[in-house]
Amino acid sequence: MTHNIIVERDVMITMRDGVKLAADIYRPDNDATHPTLVNLHPYDNDMFLVVHELLFSPLIAAQKGYAVVTAESRGRAGSEGEWKPYGEEGKDAYDVVEWAADQSWSDSHIGLYGACALGLAAIQGAVEAPPHLKAVFAYMTATNFHNGWTYSKGGALELGFQMSWVWKILARDTLSRLDLAPDTLEKASQQLAEAEADMNGSASYLPLIDFPPFQNGAAPYWREWLSHPNYDEFWQKVDNVAHASSIKVPILHLSAWYDTCMQGHMDLNAALRKNSDPQVRNQHRMIIGPTDHSAYYNKRPSYAGERDFGPEALTGPDIVSAQLFEWFDHWLRDEPQTFMPENAVRYYHMGENSWQETQSWPPQHTIESYYLHSAGQANSRLGNGTLSTEPPGTEPADSFVYDPLDPVPTTGGRSMIDVPTGIMNQSQLEERQDILVYTTPRLAKALVLTGPLSVTLYASSDAEDTDFTAKLVDVEPDGYCANIAEGIIRARYRNGAEKEEFLEPNKVTAFTIDLWDIAHTVKPNHQLRLEISSSNFPRFDRNLNSRITPALGSVSDAQKAVQQIFHNAEHPSSLNLPITEPK
Image: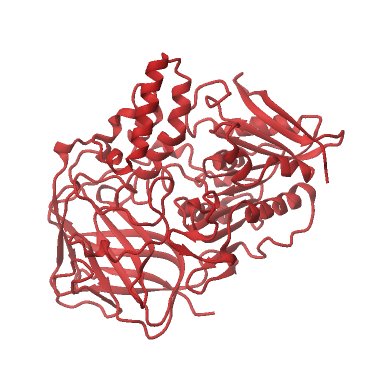
């Protein structure tokens, strides 16, 4: 155990193009060489929370005999250059890794690590494959910056998260670098503070791309992101999942069932198992817990929203740092592993409230369809919508009016920062007439769900573009309606995010809504419920029900849409469940 530590502040590291990044270095005060951990991030090394509390403190790592380099991304805090999100982090991570390997205090065994935005460069750096990189640890971070970070898998903008991330952190640093007059800087900073104080009001501004606090140089990346709603070359070139074949080191990555980034981790896991270097293909590990994204930093380490999963589900620095150090002790020091999953995936199974492992995700399962039924009045939980395994026959369609100026409010789920997350009671929300509700009878036996979840929806709209949302709910015996999973599909992207295909108004069209993956047991005497609507705001931006790109539309572009959901023999709308055998 090291007792004295050297801390060097604002060491400037030169990148291949001459730009210098500011870094802090923590290392034992001795003449030995040490395995070295590198974190490249878009925040400020003076922020104690992000440097010392999210995963581990570099001071603790130095006590354990590691050297640690925390470097600020180009164009951020003390670093030179211009910050272009997602563009240069991979190359810069490569250069910082190789710089660290060349220092007299390093033994040239380097690991990349990071959580959330501080983990972006860890995955990008792995794709760049610096020669001295030995392993990566990534926690609740982005793997594909379009799908599952800036936009959803169904094509809608992750509005609440992206907005609040910009005004809380990103834009404040950008403003400080603009050489503004003091009164101008104060006014711009006040605009950000006022925006943060009113999440719903800010998210309601139209056109979104012209949101005033993000103009005049405060957040140029906001306009760039919203100008690329399609999965185009702008996003493709920084898609780490698509470039997984370049990864040559083992990655331990962690997420949670109520994490915004969860599906990205699932996609990365599948890509690593299929496409990464064959020499490390079986060495990657993924761990999925039950919490929401903020549990590890908001001092509620076993919570997802209103639900406490108890001590077995703990996350946070004390737990995560133990996993991190064991991972790097093994790959950088050749020490044995005792805690790491024996199999490729360890996951927390909700309902059963237990940790389980599987060699591949998803575990063996059977897709079973539960069909939507009603007498044409499934509006709200007080309506007559039902779910059953019996295919529909001749049944009337259900309908509702989607008004983008009166959207369904986000009530828990997979988001972060200033948006309600995790498990929340949906019962009051389900009284809205613009939510269709389909519910099973009380279950006679447990329903064990493990794997990908989707909804097949036959629907029509009188608009040329619109959204459809789906939410899976576990109705508990006491009436608490716990949200389990949710998804959205933007109609223009129903056949893929690469190009737009508008609707023919009032024509029945098939949609697939991806609700991502789950591991949840619906217990006996509970009911399974499916909600169908057209908005989830402010988690997602609102579709204005027109051909205009939603982020570019004004209030005058917003129009109501009449939505119809069909469930008959010709159009058997269904909830498709991944059924596994009870353990």
